Image (cartoon, rainbow, N blue to C red; front, side, top):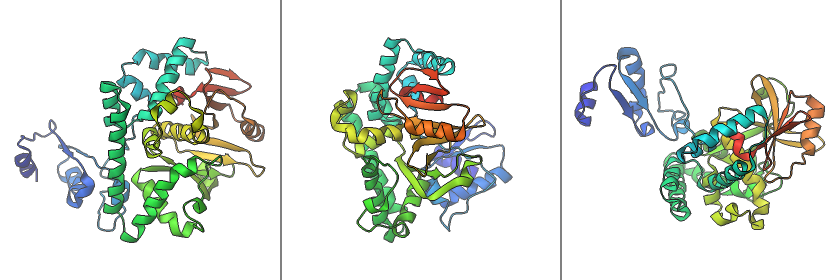
Length: 362
């Protein structure tokens, strides 16, 4: 196989020195299966296989995935830290990390600058091509065109990698996510997809979107206790789009409305901000849950961080009243809680206040 690859690539492949990359590997079953034989029979060759929708592809019956023979890494859209680094704001990143660790306020000028970058990130998102175009041009119209192209390719993938009777359902669910996030209660509701919609009709479509990485699904925990997975309610969950910029593009949100905090977005700001935080936490490797009490108190995210179960409340603006977070603290006595908002860093009454732009530090 190696001589053939060398011939096709027009490149001499040298053991331990040449990196072999199989791109879009989900399109070729034999390429995916070959990883097993590289591991067993040719371990001196360095091989990377990259592909989108692998979560869907490897669940197909005809695919023989080389379990135990490969190291798996999931690549996410660029988080806010990587966005700042792309803009050569290394010093600002270091200042944010320092203030996060010390709970000391950022200088106001830097805080305002970081909040401005945060709003830009909501529009641009973390898709590498979009970030590259933003760094080069700062042209939101060009970036929106790129985002729309990506969204179109997602729709094409839904048709290419799905059973025919599920295609319409997957598209209905995906198109409805922005509607769900515009509601005060962002928990997923089947009746919002269509009148009389039920789990039995759409659960496979949601599973496909989650496996594909196009959306992130987080479950409610009925008890905030270890292990969190044991207490999840499989019938109560939220869904978020995998990239903040694609969410804005999908909703046709105008850049100026985000940059200048237009009141016209008031109904969507909460869901958009939650979506952003979910992306940052997921990129950091957290499995996120949310908590809902019998009396209606709700905490947006619950994670396990450094061995502790930590609740995270998210506010879209400077408003930091968080009654539900207080209920959670009284109930479970966590080591501390995190409140994400537009306010500067601080720590008081076991609540760590973190500006939205610093979510990547969690």
